[in-house]
Length: 452
Image 1 (tube, rainbow, N blue to C red):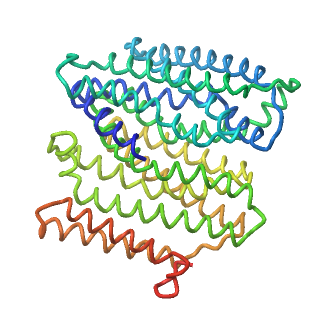
Image 2 (cartoon, rainbow, N blue to C red):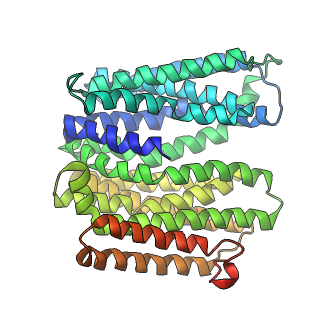
Image 3 (spheres, rainbow, N blue to C red):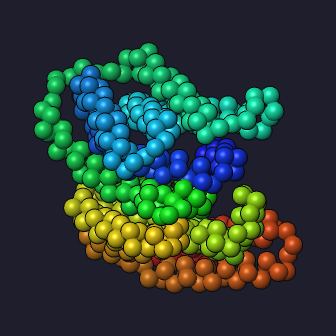
């Protein structure tokens, strides 16, 4: 929560401002393709390993290591083939991104071994080590004059070094604490069957969230520039989405463990939904009203087109939050077929709309496609999850969300003209949102409107 925003806004954003939107857009397209193909580097192996080791099941980690390195090699080959097939010309950038993602995949694999063995505090430190190192090294170049100017390739090389250090450190911890188990080897077919649902979900969600940036750079006449503009908006969405990612990782495990305890399950789902929806409503209302101010603050520009892209891109945030809550509930309850079916339809909507809209509308077309497909996915998971798990729709809370959205938008809109300092308006809005969440604490519900 502390390190990633610093990385996104003080390092990654500054690199884009220095190298230019067009140059950064080429990198953003390759990066998005790497995320789409990232499932090949793991196919759900890390999640399965974490779950089974946490349940005290014995695994042959040397066998899993061999499978992991085969998957990383497959990832490299497929990535290079698609890069050649789609006529990517900047191969140094492509190879650098591959190196970063391979090391990241290994690092995640090692961290899952550490968490499965209940070293949670250690993993908390490992979770920030790579980004912290990158903030230090890149920040030294970006904000001092001692090391010269930064280039996109140097930026990626620093990431390779820092991620490599993090992966090696994690492996040394595993070796020192003798966490590598040597149980009997398992049948490969059985392992594939166990990880296949997770692999499909990861693949479909990666396509849904990331393919548009790659398509934009490839099929628009000014693709690199449009991709850079889209990246500047997506950065805000990515930063906002951190809370959702953290909540979903908790909810999957919680639902799986308490599936038969309906009241406890409903409490967890509703409380998570309330937090995420109030956060998303506040963020969307603020960005829609103050997008020009944000664009000037972050990217030193007053372009109306860029402002509209930021507004439409961030408007998808509530849909992301719905998927985080109800997609996680379906996954935790092992309703894989239902979730995968929703994701397939969402991906089809997204791809068809992107191919139709990008040539004429560029980054705006990506935003419109995302709005349609993400809200379809969010509503579909909401309906499917409530029916499948017998959770109530909680209509009253939905009305409160809409009312809060109206109040916050009005506060921002009139505050924009009444108060000179934007930070004061933002502080008031945060206090209002915090108050709404505060009223839902069990002790205070009797004095306020309960959302249940």
